[in-house]
Image 1 (cartoon, rainbow, N blue to C red):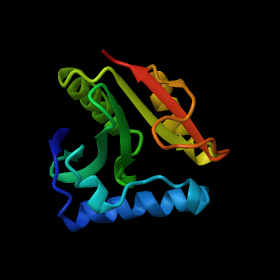
Image 2: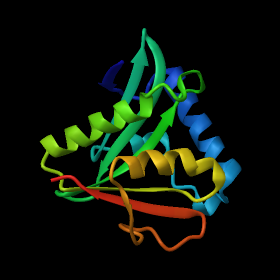
Image 3: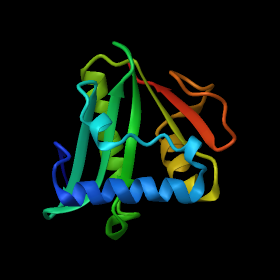
Length: 152
């Protein structure tokens, strides 16, 4: 697996992010979908990575700095062809290690509560993320689960 910072300019990355957004809308109402759009993912406070296996796009994820010590995990997505092959775990490990190296002390995230989100919930909990109250600008929402992990 090759994990690299990506500029979000390729058609395949844009397609994967569109699939991610469309999938979120299938399982949550629009006001409960918090996926960042392309311009937001290109913001200076966001680092966006892609995972490639033998040159093929296998997944993506981003880290948005909320402040000097707290960051939010965003846009984690595995390509259909590479599901259940360890892509998300490898990328999450990379993101956590990068955050530690940048002296981030905590990573938080928002994910859905419906059945379709159970694999993501399990992944994050296996990495030590625990349920928490809404953070940053989030509000209580029956379609959202908030998780956090101290890393530093």
